[in-house]
Length: 418
Image (cartoon, rainbow, N blue to C red; front, top):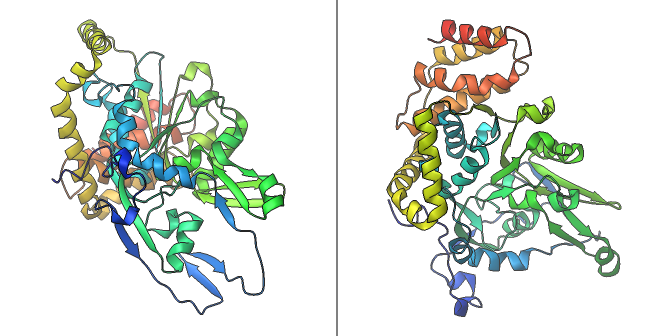
């Protein structure tokens, strides 16, 4: 495996090179795509873009675009000076939660993870430790939305316009972002804001992207998600459903891509989560307090070692972290070749039908999670054991509440699959 496959970033500028042209850097590749210029309406990635002959419109300006290129250039330097993160490989127990997180990194289309459990069980620590294992993706240099240069569905409007015009795109490899959504965040901070004054005086839509723009093609983590304000829940529901973040202000409308892996954690004793949002999570992990005395002592000792010397502690798990990173990278490469037999697909759907699971998300997520688990194990064929492992996490939060729900769930899974 090449050294550029994984790492903090494949582009790291020294201060003396900040003013150099992106195209002159050997780590930045260029892509040129052309399309017809004579049609009055161009279709690209399923989106119609009308021509502006004889009609003027306000241009859109991203306030964050200029500074974003510098932020990408300083990515490596800032990460080295950041607060040390507890290694994912050092997490003791909590196998169900760790597996759900890894499967979502392998296949982001699974739809995220909802982690519920007692306080002090390492939910937030485990999620944030995932940042060291996140793979690299291709992004357009200087774009605040982490646009995919090869997929128009996750391109920002400006990048798509440049592609249609046949302009060259500077492409870099960058690690997947993990963005924390604070409970007290305002809607403008989450969605972005429009400078109305600049729109009126200069005739441009000056848009400053928010957290959803930064999380595009990345991970959006909400700690204590069951305590999130209703208006922010509505924003997340809208973005998760459409994959786009639309900002409406004073008659001005701007839409930007917002496709992210939604990860939430919380304590069920502090309040229930709205069912509409709960259904948007692909998988559900339950975390309990460790009861084994020896295991509890080991957890306490490991944490004390990390607090005493984080750098030395991380070094002891460096080999395990690299091994896990290689495993994830390999799984992402072979994921598209993993197959699941027709009879296993029928069994999954039969379980969902007998449990009265509303909709088809349970079927879809169960198939995807089983394929991701097979890829994680280095196989190109899904087995019965793969399905039996992931289906409780894919369907648990989709079941209708009833006093015998847990027992019925276990019985049905055992009868239909095992």
